[in-house]
Each structure stands twice: as structure tokens, then as C-alpha cells.
Length: 199
Length: 93
Ligand SMILES: [Zn+2]
Picture 1: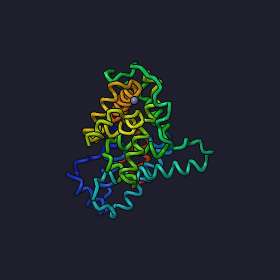
Picture 2 (picture 1 turned 120 degrees about the horizontal axis):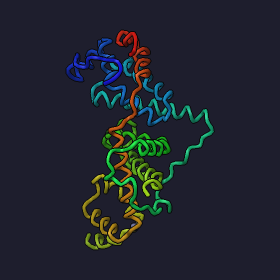
Picture 3 (picture 1 turned 60 degrees about the vertical axis):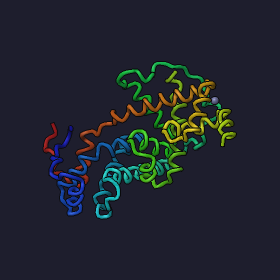
Picture 4 (picture 1 turned 180 degrees about the vertical axis):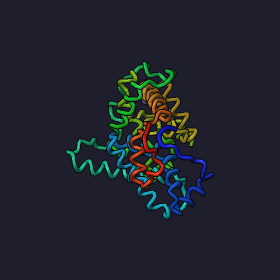
């Protein structure tokens, strides 16, 4: 790990970290940040595509988490709870941003029109390509950034963060069936966006 | 039931698309899987969608290992904002 060095072994498990957080120990707060900030930041930057906004969300998340730690009942993992705060903060930022700009948001429509059948042949991005190069990564990140925000949130949590459908629904506070519908749309939309590159 | 399963062999492309997500997640009922697979055998359009969707997801899952890094300066400012300056080295190397 780079950056600030924190001894993460002070607290042997999440329960003892949590107790220390509730006692207000600064070392516990430092541990929490060191352990969870990278993933919170990764979610924020993928959601917002802007380093400054992502940093604001990162700070808001941990300020809010530290302030509300006594409300955390341990029904989910600490990480899941943090990701829920971060995702909601990111969605709030997107809403604020929308008020600032003329909305260019695409309507959320069901992917599956004619376009879905655009012909694509096996090509350069075949799964047997080795390590992902930065060009492919950029192209992917850009395509994900183009997803409408509600689809993007589901997609990032489910496909990149690796949460289950149930967990994703829980983090976003929506139903499992709504999560599935959004995931389905997000996948098909992303496929369409990537189709030219898959050719 | 048997009449219905016979019918599913003439799945429309639209139905296939609607079930593709559950199929990929392994959540589609076995008899529907069979019908879907039978359709993919004969319908190139749907097969292309299926293949490219799989490729898309394969690529996306690679991102799990290449998450955006938390810049050191961002980490320092986060510690500062949380009144945790005591953990921040005086002179970052
Ligand atoms: Zn078809």
C-alpha cells in the first residue's frame, strides 16, 4: 500500500474496529479510512467521471460515516455500508450537476431496438487477449461513463464491485426486480456502445 | 406443459433478448435454457448479441483488477478533513 502508513493490525477484526470507532478513537478512524478509501474513491470516480467531484464524495462519505457510526448496526459489512453512503452521495452530486447544466441526459429506454442487431464480427478484443491494455481500459471506462446514471450505479456495483443483485438492491435502496431490469439495460446498452470496438 | 415447451422452440428473438440476462447469470429455468440455446443455434443475429455481450462482460470484469488509484494528495486531504493530521507524515516523500 502506498501513501500514509497505518498499522491495520491494531484491530484484529471488524467488530473491534467498530467498537473503537464508536469510542471515537482516532486510530480507528485512520484504519477505516486507510482500508476503505481506495474503493470508495474508485466508485465515486466511476460514477462521476470527475476527480474533484469524486474527492468531494470521498470526503463527504467518511465525514458522514464517522458522524453516524453509532447508527451502524452491523447488519451489513462495514464496506457495504460505506459504499451505500458513497453511492448516494454520488447520485446527489449528479443531481446537483444536472441542475447546473442543460440536461443532455439520454432517456432511459429499453435497449433492444434495431440497433441491438448491429453486425459485429470477432475481432481485436477477443477474450483471449492477455492483459488489458490502457487503451482498452480507457475505452471501457468512457463507455461506462456514458451509461445513464441510474443504470451506471447498478452496473458499477454489480459488475465491477462484484456485489450480488440483492446486495446491489440493498445499497441503492431499490427492489431486486428493479435492480435486475436496470442491470439488463445497462449490459445491453454497454454492448451497443462497445460494438464498434468489438468489431 | 409439453405443448408449451414445444412452443418455446419457436422462441422469438425478442423473447431471447428478454431472457439473455438471466441466462448469463445462470438464473434461467432449465426448460427455458434449452429453448434459448436452440434458438441461438439457428439465429445468427441473437448469437452475435450473445457473443458480444459475453465479451463485453468479460472485459468489464477485468476492470475489477484495475481500479482507479487513490492519489496520495487526495488521501492527505481526506485525513486532514477528518482531523487525522497526526497520521500524515510531515514531509511527503
Ligand atoms: Zn434470434
